Structure formats: structure tokens, C-alpha cells
Amino acid sequence: MILTRAAIQKAIKAKTLAITPFDESCLGPNSYDVHLGPHFAAYQFSDIPFTDPQYHPDAPPYRAGIDPRHMVHWTMPAEGEVLWPRRLYLAATLERTTCLATVPWLDGCSTIARHGISIHVCAGRGDVGFDGHWTLEITVVEPVRVTPGMRIAQVSFFQTDGWPTHDEKYQGRYQDQGPFPVPPRPETKAVPKVVLDALQETYRARRP
Image 1 (tube, rainbow, N blue to C red):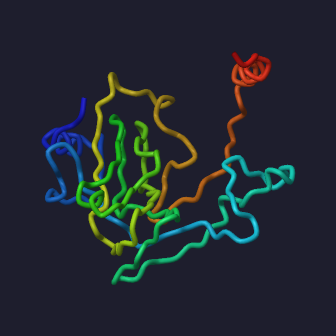
Image 2 (cartoon, rainbow, N blue to C red; image 1 turned 90 degrees about the horizontal axis):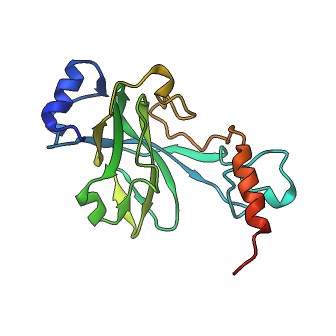
């Protein structure tokens, strides 16, 4: 169930949801407008033309992609700057959301979309318990100017079925994100044995 404007206001008063800073003019029928912060980051490719989500300094040569934590960081000037196609920009929302009992969902605004701006590659859904600024994965179809403080996205909130326990709330790698875009953090979870077994079985399977 998605929260309406009145339900969002009620959750804020009950302190199960927080949006900082908050202004009622940013409330829509069932979402809240969030705005673009000034801090950006991007990959700096040189001799190594690819990234690797499972990068590790001790990886064999064929896995020696760019360490995803090594990115160029800068602050956008007040007059804004032009973003260019075929590049991934990480940015952050000015607003911080704290969701103790709802699942937040970030999506682009229709006007932003009509300018060919995508504000996330695939990570639009948050988790119950998430507390932090949102890192945006921005790509553009055509060159387009963006400015700090512009309306960039909207967050909707979905009610969970039951009150989540402490262990059910998000406690992942991107909890407590600040106003600076957070680069990819190394994968720390071991691959489950059932997945490894299934992978081996797939390798042994015959192509029909």
C-alpha cells in the first residue's frame, strides 16, 4: 500500500518517517519531491577501460578492473554544469530520508525524464529501515544542464505488512549515507553454497 499525502504527513508526525529538510510544498498526492545536491563523482578511466563490481586488489590480472572506490569527486558551481551522454554520474539528494516502517521508492520526475535524464540505473527501491541521503546514478540521452537544488526525483513510501523487527530493517553497506555520493563498496557477502552448487550444475548441463 502506497502512502498518500495525508498518510505521509501522519507518519512524519508519528516519527516513523523523517524527511530532512522538509517542506509541505514538496508533497505530491503520494510522493515527496527531492532535490539535487551539488556534489558529484564519476569514474576516471585511463589505461583500464572497465570497472569490476567484484574488484579486489589481489584479484588475478583478468579481473584487474578499476577499483570502483577510486573516482573523481567535484562540487558543481551554483550556475550548474552540463552533463554528457555515455557517462555515469553519481550525485546525491539534498534530502535525507529515515524510514522506520515504510519501504521508500525513488523515481524520476516526468519533466526530468522529458529532458532525457535518468536518475538511477536500477537501484530505485530502498529498504525498510533505510536512513540517509540517496545516491543518484545519473545518465543523460542528450547534453543537458543541471543545477544544484533543482527538483530531480520523487520518493514514494510503501507500508509494510506488519511492523518490522530490528533484524528485518536495512543494515547494509549504504546505510547512513551523507550528502556526498557514495561510490560502490566492495562486496563482502560470501556466495552461498547453494548458488555455487547450482552454478556447477549449470556448467555441467548439456546445451539442447
